[in-house]
Image 1 (tube, one colour):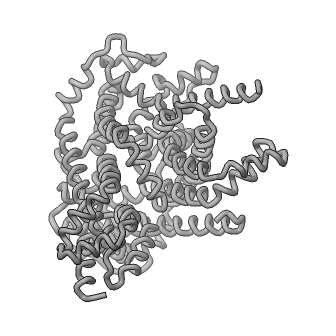
Image 2: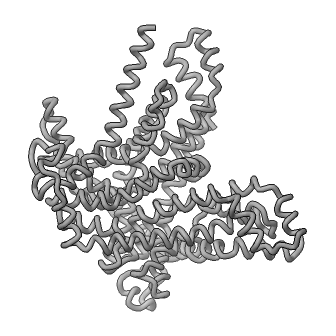
Length: 274
Length: 294
């Protein structure tokens, strides 16, 4: 019995250590962001600010134009979320509950396409968007993220559980397909649509490589692209960079904490793709 | 199935399929076509300057030392990073699964938090944590008597540093999946093993691992695919350096395509990466099958 409680304490200690490993970088980021300029560039590295202040944030907003990057990210992620809900929500429902010619074969093809890394498409996509005049626009950022096989798959798996009788009864009552979708299907799908919205928002907010390619003017940068550029200019300004990281990470972290249940549900349902 | 019913299906699925077709499937085909041309800066000015060159880009790729270097670096990242990440994920999942504390939910959230953070932002944090003079990691090492390591400035340490960062960022994801898997293993299996006198390592080896087999395979294939796409970490933390020790295949593709505008050549790089990924996934699948894990 004693050995077992000893083992328990050991497990708890290891778990604490692991949690510290996971959370420490984020806490330190927060702490350093409240330090005065230059305070963090010392040895030994200070854990807490001597006199917590907002000078790093003030410098960030006054000299780097972070507010507009923040707004860009917010606009792109919000638009992307709504587009994804529309495209993937409707298609996911169709692949689960509406019969049309070639449906199952097309779905197989979509799943097979998951093995192709998105980066393969980036070079020709850049040229296509150049022809369409969409380089350096939010539309250019959104085109490849508005629809995703993962999103369709997620909604489809959930929509499969809608009883056909429910839809048939509505059809017999003379309801149109659009009305059935909006008044019967969407309410049932709400949990998975929240999951999809959360996944899309986080993915677009956090996305880096494609926005880096397609956004050529600084004024259109999203936060990650701006942050990467800033980190090359301000190599020594640790406080400033940490403040920028806080501003980038906190919104998604809060969103995750608020909607964690939906996020984990989607992660497990979608682990076929990941 | 009436025509009308079929039409309804197409109306609902159509917009998404058109988007995927136009902006995913067409570009994939175009990428292959592009990789067979000499498309470069001159073509960008006038498409007429483009010529079909067959597989010349692929042949040139094989003669380019930096491509081999990038491929080697990416292999390093995958071969060390994937098993390490999964080991940490599995360890964390086992700890959470067996934990007799009400704090499990809190721990799970804490361990998962890095997954949802913005890669570029946390890479910036880690660049600071890894700083030779002011970084916290060297401070801890100093406390136990280890001389400071120039993590991101020494070509021997740059990749290990990036791997450490990637493990931190990603382990929570697989942890959640594996934890869900562990919770489906019936406890009487463990009881039976215990009665047969199996110690905890034997129970892990002969009950947990076989039961988790298919899930471990899935998780390792997904993680591997993700790790082959290494890009933002070196872009932010090392810019491919020092002495090209962290140039990944995608980093090389990005440089060739969007810095030097050799889009034909860069497309060949993208397809080469795709091929390597397919090959590795197949090998892993075969290996797992041979061991009866699927």
